[in-house]
Length: 339
Ligand code: NAD
Ligand code: UDP
Image 1 (cartoon, rainbow, N blue to C red):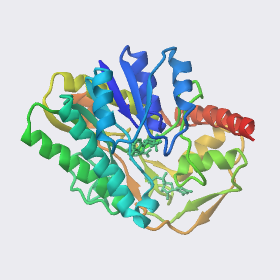
Image 2 (image 1 turned 90 degrees about the horizontal axis):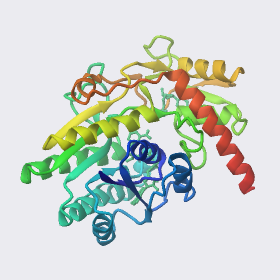
Image 3 (image 1 turned 45 degrees about the horizontal axis):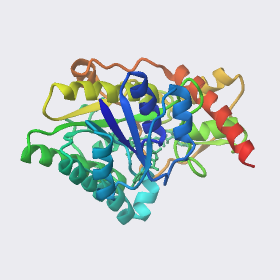
């Protein structure tokens, strides 16, 4: 298949590009580099041994998308492009609705014009909001608590309405839990700008000495050790979920929703403890107050993806840490060479 990856040089897009190319698909990347680095596509080529085209463009540029879809005879799109910082979405909601929602409408219009009607959309577990029960299955009520989450829900609803209006579409809505880790080569990984918000990249920067210590946001939750529990999923398992969804859509019209997680809740202390074991040293940390809006526990019921897509997350927290460390080492060398 010829597959267009919007946001293809970002964290999840780059790993999925590698996996799809390794599986024999023809991949085209489309990115405006607002949150990625232009060197990523060369590193994807280095890993895969393929010369993967990378179109510089914004998903709100419908004309360029139509041209790209025709030029590369695209059969299916995976739509990763979007902004994802929750705090920024609270401060600048219009930027988020424009980029994530208007950007998706522009992409869907382009796909309609080019008669490309297969799409996998990067949604998020944030669409569920505060869990009413756990684990979260796809039927759990939806109540996102911030603008970022609402952009994801709106795009899900747009895609569902589109399928109702034209049943020849094939749509998979993938609700990711907490993607972490990196490709085993260590050449690509999560590359946040500035001080990271998320636990794993923060821990990695403390380990490398870039940040002095980790603040553990609360140790008085009703959890196994008092710290927050999440469903961390290795980014290569997540990438595999996209391939499984594309395979599924080849034989299925309509719209299906899948949670992609491991189904295993892991606490902050457990994740940090595994990281310390792998690197053989302590991560300096202190207990801080709870972070506003944080959930105590969030993890997936993955049985639908397991049974329908025959997809299973295979990698554990140890794999997430070792691959993350390899990437962090390479990333530090890149930063060193930039200085
Ligand atoms: P990322 O920021 O690393 O990648 C997104 C990519 O999209 C970047 O390369 C960015 O430059 C590009 N982009 C953004 N706006 C664009 C636009 N208007 N036109 C073209 N390119 C644009 O993020 P990621 O972690 O790889 O996330 C990919 C998708 O998955 C996002 O939609 C995100 O909301 C969703 N998601 C991510 C997580 C997570 O924790 N990483 C969890 C759930 C859902
Ligand atoms: N967390 C923390 N310190 C940090 C960042 C995160 O203790 O510097 C905790 C956070 O409170 C949550 C877990 O780590 O319990 C995962 O947070 P992250 O932001 O990675 O994911 P999200 O909360 O968005 O699912």
